[in-house]
Length: 142
Image (spheres, rainbow, N blue to C red):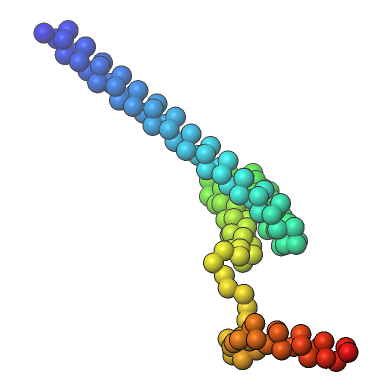
């Protein structure tokens, strides 16, 4: 009777350990995916908007400086909270890339025109005006 109970406890323990390993691997894959998507977004933003590279380089420098600062703070204080500086640097870089990307997107944006000028300076009878202008130009040329 005791032998069966020990076997059951071992099966439950190995099941829990297997589930923990599976969840750990899933978490590692999720983190790797997020890192790859982030790097692709940053590189794509650098390539797509060359006129905004100065802003993007400043944000990248802030990210690198925050990472170096986190390493220095960790070595000096041995505090686990120093890793927050890395998160701040990455957040600055991602927010800058997102702002540049959103500011320069042309999707669903109308041209910047004044409605009054557009209505007043539009030819309502375009074909008649063109033929009249062409006939006046022909008479002036003759």
